[in-house]
Image 1 (tube, one colour):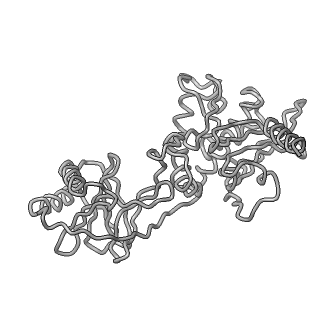
Image 2 (image 1 turned 120 degrees about the horizontal axis):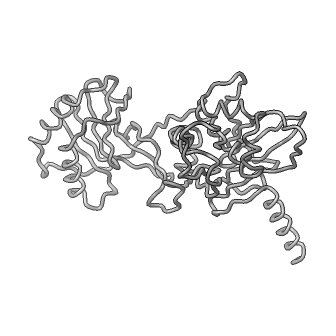
Image 3 (image 1 turned 90 degrees about the vertical axis):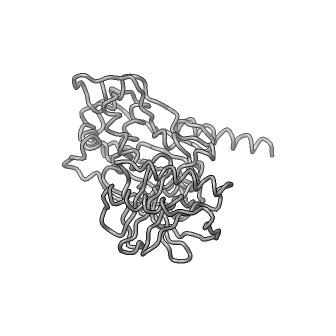
Length: 350
C-alpha cells in the first residue's frame, strides 16, 4: 500500500522513493511497495521546483551536488537561465554552476543590426560559433521564453543550451515565424571575418522564492523519514492523514505552509555539531503530538506538526541525517554514537 495514495487502483511499484531527493544526493531509498510510481510522478515536478527555484537553489548552484547527486564538476548543478547585464550595459543570457558564472552563445537582434557572441572560455571560438549557427538553423516549435525589463523594446535574444532553446524579449512572446525571419535575415548576411574579440562580465539576477509546493516537499521528506524509521504502517496511520493529503494536493484545513526559518548566525544547538551543508530530519514529541523538523543544507528549516501520536505507541528520539558532501547517511542515534566515540578517542589520546 502506498503511504500517500493508499489502496488506490492500478498502482505500480517499479521504482523506489529516495528518502531525501536524489537531486540533493540522497542515497537511502524506501523499500519497494512503500511509495507508488504514481505518487512519485506527482512529486517529481515539485522536487524540480525545490531544486531550481527555491532558496536552496542558491546553495545547490554554489556548492552542489550536481545532476542526480553527482559530485563530478562536469555535472555541477546549473541555475535557471536568466537575463543578466554585461558591464557595457548589454543584456545577455547566463547561468551559474558551482559558484561560477557562465554566458551562453547568443544571437541578439537590436535596432538595425544583429550580433552573435560566444563565451570567452570556449577554446575554439570559431568552431563554437559555427556550431551555434547550425543550432539556429534548426529552431524548433517549442522554446523557453524569458521576459526582462533589461532588454530594449523590439530586441530579441535567442540562445541554445543543453538541448533547450531560449528566447528573451522585453515583454511579449514572439511567434516562431518572427524569430525564424530574424534568424534567416542574419544568417544570410553573416560574415565570419567580421568577428571581434572582447571581454565582458555579466551581472546575474536570480529570482528565487518559496511557495506551497516547495513546503510540501519538505513535509514529504518528513513522512519519508518516518516511514524509514518507524515503518510504512506507522507513516500511513490515520493521525497523519491530513498532512499526507496536503503533500499530495495542497489542500488542508491546517496551515502547514510558512516561510522557512533561515539560520544566518553560527548555530548554538544541534546544527552546530551536524556536518556543514548536511540535510536532516528529527522528530520531537510534546503534548501528545509528533512534530518533524526538516533542515536542508543545515540552514533552511521548517517544522511541521504531523498529528497526534498514535495511541499506545511510544516515540523515542529519532531522525535521519544525509551528509551528502561526505557521502554518508545515518540515524540520529548512529550520529550521536559516532560523536561520542570520537570524543572518547580524543580524550584517550590525550
